[in-house]
Amino acid sequence: MFDPKEAIASLKAHFVASDTYRLTGEALLEWMQDMETLTNMVTAAATDGAAEAESQGMHSDYGCKDLAVLLRVKLKLDSGEAGQRARLVRELPSLPRTQALLREGKISGRRALIISGTVGKVPAEKAGKAEDVLCQHAPRLNPRQLTYAGKVLRSRIDPEGVHRDEQEGYTRRYLRMGTNEHGYLMIKAAFDPITGAKIKTVLHALAKPRPVGGEKDPRTTEQRYADAFAEVIAIAMASQDLPTCGEERPRVVVTMSWDNLHEWTGAGYTQWDDPVSAGSLRLVACDAEVMPVVLGDESQPLDVGRSRRLATVTQRRALAVRDKGCAFPGCDRPPAWTEAHHVVHWIDGGPTDLGNLVLLCSHHHHVVHQGDWEIIFEHGIPTFIPPRWVDPDQQPMRNIRLDPQLRM
Image (cartoon, rainbow, N blue to C red; front, side, top):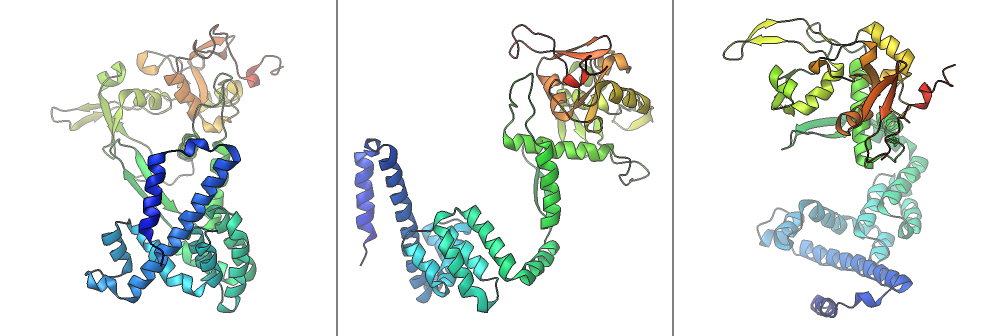
């Protein structure tokens, strides 16, 4: 009988020797592949042990509801891993080829469950064929690729089932929102395939890398997609077709003292009571209504003035003609996807006129506010002076769409 203690002792000796450094190139890769094979085989052996524990009713002996709970309590597995191990115990006996591949170390437990999940959804008379096809490809595919292969296979042999799954899945759609300890909105959601395709299409388009001063986009992939999502929301809020609430279009309301906003100090609060720094609010205030409210001693509103400082529709049209979209060098975002930025901030006395406004997309709006870029107007055309870390000579830059030769 296999003694795991001998394997444990062998691995301990390996750690003491610490001689993996002797391996290089193909030899090291082969060693890593062998270790992965061993890991898969250990999973298969551990599943056999768990199956025997299930057979003996060991979970009841230890006061556990089922095998998964026993694995969590006695083996200290997390709930997800314990559930997957319990699934292997239940499902592998009916999948002989899959079980054989796991015992040979050719696939992982996760890939075995992907096969099981796919086979379990097809009609019983087609289950054997589905397992054969997936087992043929599984050893050379990673889990994501195998999942895709399973979807394609099922769509071909059981299209009616795929349609049923889509209908059932639609009823399980959801979107949850919460705020973390830093005040950041956290979103978790599930959408049907068609809606998901729409979302991916839009986000892929908006998340393309955008250069900053001729340099590559400094954002990570995750940051680019987060910015793309924010840009979708900004575009939607700028639409005239959004439904109203209390006869007003949806808007973000932030409360802050005028002195703090003007001096870049302190914090304001959204209508959801989330704190926001003065710096962030000054950026938002570039293209948002600022409404003065006179408060009493206990902060009760006494008088609400008229909103002011927002660029007019006519000015936005003029800016669209002049800037043709985001004016930042190298950007190609259209006018509808931009915000009107005050070069000299309105709060600091900058006027709301064409000689002090420039269209910037959300990303480059942040770049300008945070990256020491200077904007000047040459013959009425916005020109950007990069910071020294971008260009030590600080040569003026202009979006090619605003090049005088192209404007003729």
